[in-house]
Image (cartoon, rainbow, N blue to C red; front, side):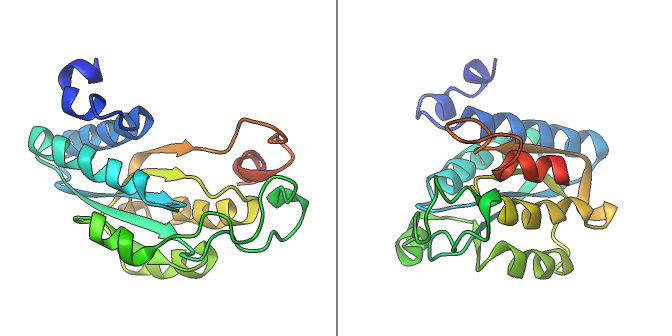
Length: 189
């Protein structure tokens, strides 16, 4: 149904999993009378996900009458050194997925980058009291970074919609299992 209602997004090959989460979050906000929400991408790398989120939001805001603030969390310097086996060091290596932050900023219209390790940036973000979180995506690869990002769900209730839609990128694939990475972080959280 989304591809019929919003063909401009799906014709461009954007991320339907992002579209679904953002659409559901905005619909809930509208139902509750909330006029502004936040969405976030944890693990930005080259920025294609943030650009997709901006296009999705640009399309949906007029339909829902809800304004959306977009945040992108990333080290800016690629993956940090894995801390232990839970960060799947046989699959990921330090320095992968480096961001060209200057080039990315030129591509972005409204997203705000939060650069640094998630464990160092998430608490300040929560203290800044953003609009209620409606959707977030986690593509952090590592267990430890995912655990830090999930602290967002421990924010005061007024900073979260009653239901926050979540997308986790790295839960399936070679060596990804319930004992490592994002799947273990979800379980432990």
